[in-house]
Length: 563
Image (tube, rainbow, N blue to C red; front, side, top):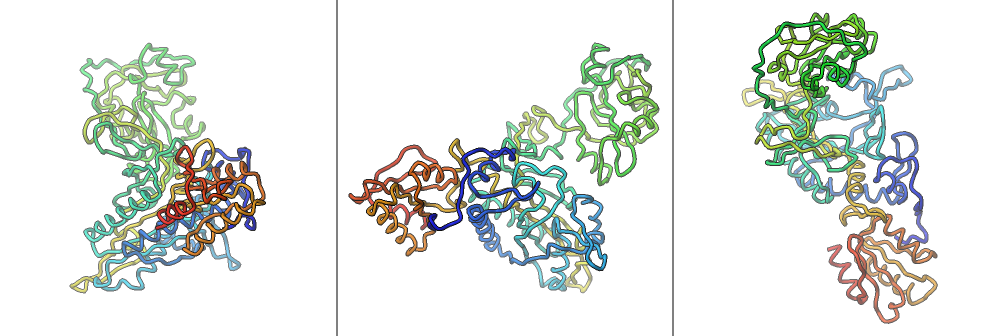
């Protein structure tokens, strides 16, 4: 492509409207442009990168025997009602009415439709297994879009689904997709970790995530100093290594604690540590107020709580609900005599003579023990902390931030049963199909690559995803020798079907160099004064220094890059 007659622009200043390195650089490089909150245009140079990512995904999916199709984005709402997921998505779904007042949604994901499609060729056990996928736009009404392409309302996703007659067959297909995903992200040159994760609204038997390590990642990736354990923070188990307290149990005592509400304030009042307290947190869970009791030095893991209760949504109860449940002002809730269901973290069973709110304004109970109240259930409710013990080997846990770029789900028979996707076995009996689901966020991959591959000058694209692998830059387009040499190199590439960029704009050489660094072209050939002697300058974006080489050597290097 020649820049002199192409749509191409870059921005010199940082964008004030972007909150991540990747979104700022992609905007400045003229690859994306925000159209509204959480919505971006993909500009020509950015579309080339996105197409390269798509090609990698397609090649690896096709290599595993997957077949591509395309589903509609506009879907009747009753499809999700039938599968039981409409309420799970809640307000995250974009919904609308057609002219006949029939309810539709913009698809956030397509498990249900793939199950419907699979029923067209899944009547006999002999029809299995098979793998279907699409690359298509998804829509989710995010509460807080941010970080450019990482959390948006409209995004392009590759979603694949496997169909088998039993769990063993699902396992085989799952392992194939696992391998394909490793190959995909390796080719993108991403630094990633594979972690166990919560199945969430998708449901099913197992979920694993591919997390690209990044400081702006919204997920916490839990690792281990001593082994290969990895998990999403949402489901990481807290290993309780504390010895049960041998302290003699004392009689519960009501203590007046004026103006002491927080753990820190109450700890100062009693002269105790936060771990000597039990926090009582009141939540609205699917419309009902419940209480969670956890050690004072811990945080509640809401994902664990939701799963334990089999609930869909939860949020901290409002002040009015707290005061109604406790009979006191906010800050004095406790499990003793509380009128709502109480769920207790299992670590509290080892504690003695702890301090809790008394459900009375400006009062706490001291010397409380588990016999003084009746929890509905004792569960693992806490969030792990960095330095906690690994559940696999006992070494210390470590934390990294990650951007979820891909996920794998063993769905089992959840969707096939709700969508009536059945097959007949060898004995002519009806059985539900076993499904797997596998997703990759293409624009997220694009952003994650930039987060990991950039410097003070701009983006540093890996070869496989760069918009162009090679750029040719004549220093003086008015110099006939330089321009002719640049054009000859360009024509050589075109004859060999090498897709290269020729910056033949009438700009200063410094401007061209800065632009090529900003948009991240991996290899640059500068055609300057040496052209008269058959010499050009070679520079690699990810290396310091430049080399003066012959035009023939430049052609050989280009051949090596593309072949």
